[in-house]
Length: 307
Ligand SMILES: Cc1cc2nc3c(=O)[nH]c(=O)nc-3n(C[C@H](O)[C@H](O)[C@H](O)COP(=O)(O)O)c2cc1C
Image (cartoon, rainbow, N blue to C red; front, side):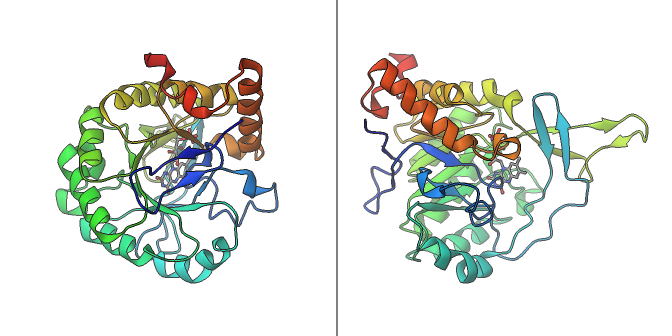
């Protein structure tokens, strides 16, 4: 049975995963925190926490709220910054037999490009995932990923700055997801990740105040799965680059739905907080399904829903 998938088939450096099961950024730290819980070499790839150029403190507490079938988070991209990542994390990853993809974010296009440039040709880093859900400070705080133009500008700048495989992670907080996807693919992204969190909020009726210190947060978990699945299905119709499905995946059946909708690989985030072994269970479940159905390669079922 062949579980391997290629996430950057058009990039000379390539990005082949031994299986399609990945961690979602911000939910698996730098991988180092979880490496004692299970054999992380079994994962297809690890996507690390979002990293800005400089270290960041993140948002005021509370940063997390539970919701029916999901959670809201407003971590605010707390992180160690790119220099510490290069100094302390990359050398550890270089010894791992699992590709690590660095999720990057910036408040300006130049910041994205500067981080991408710093990561090029570093041992231990197999790819970059560009989070375009960040507020563009020059454009008054609107997310880069909301419009095809700004999404394309960030992608072009990152593409120019690195030869590494580039995945661009799209935000669902736009009415133009297919146009954004096409624009990003047109600027040389190797793959797309869909989706980041949906904007939401919760209110404490007793204090009559928003629950989150940041007022709004990002909704994740099973609640967003149908939205994410729909977006993967729609985007897969208009681009020819691999899609990584993400959003509410907590079982092998969820993962298979995304693959059948058009995803080449999948990421799981929130489900790992309540079940740290979820990625392995998803992998085993995919293997069992393929055995039962006589499927020899993942490629056979990618986008089967459309045929
Ligand atoms: C606590 C938390 C932190 C996150 N941090 C990041 C991040 O740094 N960069 C990013 O692109 N996405 C981040 N995300 C979004 C996830 O990677 C993922 O896209 C989203 O949670 C949907 O997947 P899920 O329902 O499996 O969690 C974060 C999500 C959570 C819950």
